[in-house]
Image 1 (cartoon, chains in turn green, cyan):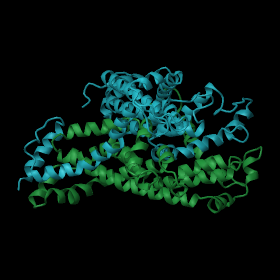
Image 2: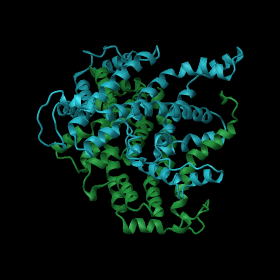
Image 3: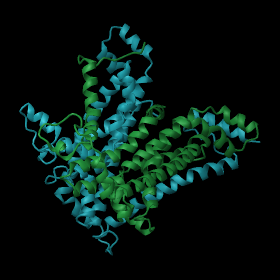
Image 4: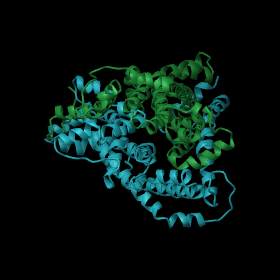
Length: 276
Length: 314
């Protein structure tokens, strides 16, 4: 039997219903609105599900706006951020928590400390730094900034996973004649798959949803990511809620789909990483 | 081969993280590999965080307006200007309110959720995955969703309240209430992450301990406060520190729903700095405000670590 704590006098069932409505309700409402006709969205008595199911909002979104372009840009930035974050944080975690190079405690501390500085406070000087390096209005600049805000957390998250791979394996690999690089790539990394998945999801979601840096560091319309596109859409078509809803659904759909497939592993990985 | 030596030392260090037993005993190839592996993150952090931070300090001592335009050194004048600006102080105060109310709302929601996730049954099992959905929704979408739900002409929540005779007005434009609205929206976006982490931490509490407390006649509240809570402290401490900083950092949720308005009612420090730099084009003042805020946060952080750190926290 699992130990369960009771929530005071509030019956758990009611809490569960309330929580379900709070979490799922808003998302459901937006998704169902996206498939309604303009008249139905605005009518005085709301309908719980679309009476005349329509895809016209999505048609309009992809035909008359640059949404497809923004989608492509977001995919490029998110995939690049994920790959670079994975490489950087796995390497750092391995060096700091497995090989424990001299001074690793200090380095880990400094990296985490600099991660604690709120990024929004640094937009101005960061803009200057990127401009000096010719990285304003490029994918590379945005990816670099994203990685700086995902890699430290991911490195820390991977710590727990590194510890859970027994050190005896390294010794065994060494006895078999494997050098440190082979031990890392062929012995330890494959055993960290759940950690890798967690880090990948975290960095993908971070860069997919990132708004502040993308709004300042990307200037060209052709390079803008989805969050920027959506916020422009909201400003431009305030009256056309159907279109805005379709845009919202298209923006959140990719991460939700990702979650349907790997959500379980992500939640498990986050818990494992954070509580070790 | 000397590799086994290095791994053995690595293992002893694992159990006592601060011991420097590895020094001098690590083989050269392992050491080289180690530094090569650590170099990228150090380089990226130096470029994206450390260098801009130094840059901010320099800019704050000048009188620069548009970013990157030529400027003269003016010493601490900019700081005096910022410190004499009422808006700076009210933004700092609002950030304090933002931080504390967000913390309270999210902690309550996250704890309640974690306790529900811990139960057995299909709801709890499935909720462990879908509970994270609000966090996965991009902030821009979060802003649109809530603006739509609370829209004063067509919003469903507005209509529901109207049906029972309550007029909630325009929650994103109604003076002091606006800050609360944005805090609630932000909490909706962020509480699932804490909920999942707390749920994970709760699962690590050995149930023998809880059973023992029950045997001794402790009721649910007593058990929670004197057994579960102390055991959770290390995780709550880390969550409190990182969560506060993430929360302080929030700019997008506020900017996308209210742009800091109405009349500055939701202008927290990040919004103030953003506006000063990109709307008012006063780079130096924005930089000075950033430096001052980092100092305030550092002091708050040190105090938090000093007073809230659990005894056995490594």
